[in-house]
Length: 258
Image 1 (tube, rainbow, N blue to C red):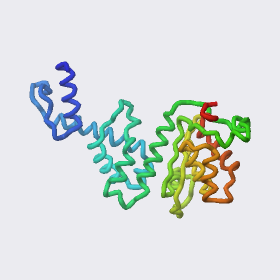
Image 2 (image 1 turned 90 degrees about the horizontal axis):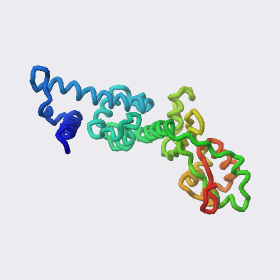
Image 3 (image 1 turned 120 degrees about the horizontal axis):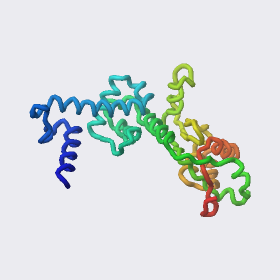
Image 4 (image 1 turned 90 degrees about the vertical axis):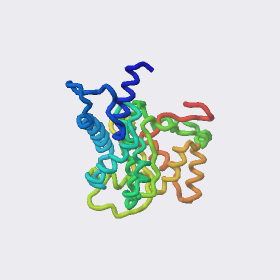
């Protein structure tokens, strides 16, 4: 490592670790080593990281309040530094951190809500790919359909939660008036088939089918799993409803993508 590269590494380490001394050779114009001035730069780094988290997780922040969120974000930023120069990606592991953060234990749904907001950011920045159309499904021979696998759109993600996180998120978008009364589990699909990111709560009687399809099961196997838990399961309605969300981009037939 060159001397310049070593200096850069020392600077970066000291900037994000308050326990580190000011790097050797880093002085003011009068030649002094000034820890207080360097602390200003350290603080700016953490302010920037906590602001990035606040922007990425607005509903999570709103639920716990500004002060609690700022404290939680600071603890996270102390432990997790950006792995990418693209700051909008910072916080991918924030939901897992929330799940183990003792002060947030009284809000057991908070980590899943943060996972939903993580999926929103990923969907927004995902590759632009044309979504799978219903015409493609209608062209598949009936005897082949059970062996068909749907391939998720690059923007698509599915969150299976023990909490009504999709409904909670919608309530904070002004889509639901009043409080969220239900505590039922929800399966939520996030996708951006064209321009806008959509958040969709899957009907409870279709949730098992949706989960299986996203796991890579064939349509036949996914339908069988759904029928095991609900003898009245409507395969056609569930399939059309799922594909209509724009959450898939292609199908695989007998091991080959179509």
